[in-house]
Image 1: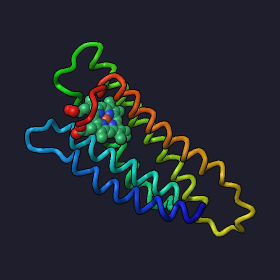
Image 2 (image 1 turned 60 degrees about the horizontal axis):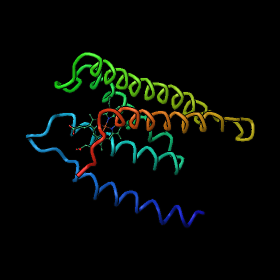
Image 3 (image 1 turned 45 degrees about the horizontal axis):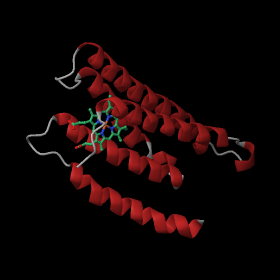
Length: 155
Ligand code: HEC
């Protein structure tokens, strides 16, 4: 298992380096493209930190996703209006909210982790599971919004 993880991690990092340029924005692209490319990189790094139990390295990426969610609520794509715009903004709030919940859980986890208490006396595994579930919420929200607003095959 450990060897498999060791083999997979460099692959994930290489993948994020290779894939990211595909989504690097050009001047003609709408700002949402650059923001989404960033989202993609942040969630990959988050997955890596979760799998390697580097919880203290997570807050920066989670906070970036939170800020992107907030940005999407205030600046939805200009070609959306009426019900479509409201749905888009609702998903953007959902993303912001999922990231906020992850931030709260993480800060709780990091507080407990930093306490100098015998490891056996601290049952914080449930917090780790909750953080991972909340990461699942973040990804589910990406998919919910993409189902409706990003159906096209990425070229
Ligand atoms: C509120 C809606 C919404 C949410 C939430 C959302 N996206 Fe997107 N995403 C879009 C839209 C719309 C596009 C298409 C943008 C375009 O092509 O102009 C897109 C495009 C993308 C792209 C392709 C960019 C490109 O250049 O073609 C990636 C990658 C991406 N999103 C990743 C994510 C990730 C990862 C998350 C979750 C952390 C996420 N998105 C959450 C709406 C959303």
